[in-house]
Amino acid sequence: MAADSSPGLWRRIPLWQKIIAGLILGALVGALMGENAGIFKPLGDIFISAIKMLIVPLVFSTLVVGITAMRDPQKMGRIGARTIVLYLITTAFAIAIGLLASTIFQPGAGLDMSFDTPVESEEAPSLVEILVNLVPQNPIDALAEGNILQIIVFAMGLGISLMLIGEKGEPVVQVFESFAEAMYKLTEIVMAFAPFGVFGLIAFVAGNYGLEVLLPLAKVIGVAYLASIVHVLVVYSGMLVLLGRLNPVRYLMGILDALVVAYSSASSSGTLPISIRCAQKNLGVSEGVSGFVLPVGATINMDGTALYQGVVTLFIAQLLGVDLSLTDYGMIIVTGTLASIGTAGVPGAGLIMLSIVMAQVGLPLEAIAVVAGIDRILDMARTSVNVAGDLMVTTLVGKSEGELDLEIYNSPNKA
Image 1 (cartoon, one colour):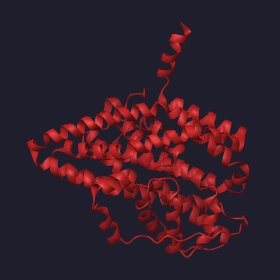
Image 2: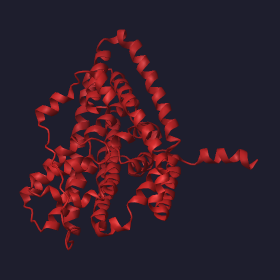
Image 3: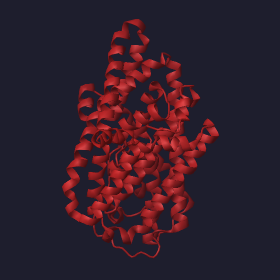
Image 4: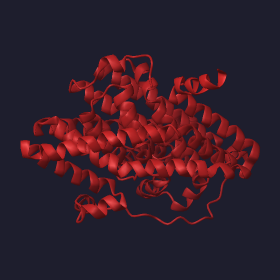
């Protein structure tokens, strides 16, 4: 009798609770076993591979379905404009909060560290190069290489074309709708493995980043995490209340699954399948809006990366005893906002973009070596902010378009 009841009990536990349990257990095992906890890394690798398997087909199918579901090119333009404006506003807020937090807490003051490890500078692509590279010469290559920006452009073009040809496009639209549903189900199957994958990822991270690495830089980690929490609780929750008249607690409960996966995987793009699931099942956003706004957000909305750039740039300036002017602060905000848009949603990409921001205010790029050792720890926090921002904007856009199911949103029982 007990054996029959245990599977039912496991299914009744909310997914986010199971993932949190895996995260805590992984941290404990990693702390106890040290580098030997690497034996659990394959669990995390399998989970990340399964998530990556979902990204391209899910982004492509949901974007096509999302655009064709709108039936109105003007509506798509309106949603696109709102989405981009909201993303830019929240990104500017994020980097400003990062700068403010570093100014108040001075994480770099009193530390004496050398910068012997050279770091190569990465030159930012020009606006013309970015625009030219948006259009895929071969969409099949873009799909095979996982070039999300080019996939988005091709999917949008195909979706608009199917919408414009009307009835002739219905058979193809139905195929994409069925394909998208199959991808949602596959996402659900992969997510059932999430607690074990998160356990493996966190056990490996905890085992390899011990106190020896963290203690000297604990203050900058603490400031970055505090700023991240403030941004989510104040900016995102505030916008939901002021612009959407929505209960922010329901939003926070509804995105827990995505946040935990984002934190453990440190990949905004990798978390996209879970973000789409949370938006539709927990927050009540329509397939059309979530299928359009979230893939765009996973590509251009990097609030956490922008916040991180503000914290770390000022931290390094404090380490070197460099006084930044108000002009420098403004340059950090503008450059950080634009650089974050070009940041790939994969682990470690923020470190590369940081070099662009630092170069703009004349800080030596060699200093990046100081934070390189703890970048994974910082990456986990900034990715969580990125994902939370994607879901907040999706919720607001859904509300503004009348495509937010308030009964689902206000339900206290989030799946």
